[in-house]
Length: 108
Image (cartoon, rainbow, N blue to C red):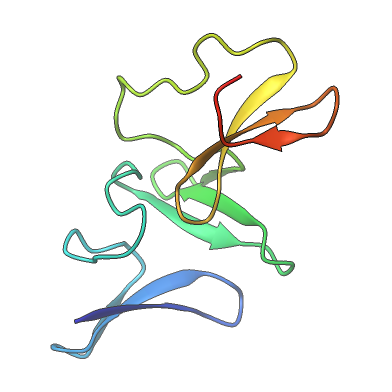
């Protein structure tokens, strides 16, 4: 089966123990968390202090905001001003109030 690992630079890669092959791209058969939530060509990265970011291998751009492969999924719809949608390392959605600095799992 597949295993996810991180290289010394913090980049995520995948090992297929059946074939002894590695890949930077999350395999469609990888059973890890959030597998269905990243669009094709995107991968998760980590800063040296373990902060999660996302890399679009198509454009070579990065973002702190988790991209969605579901165009109908709009977690930010109806958010009050100064609120932001974020996702943890497991793909769970949470919300940040930039006025107070507080976070919540529940859509405000």
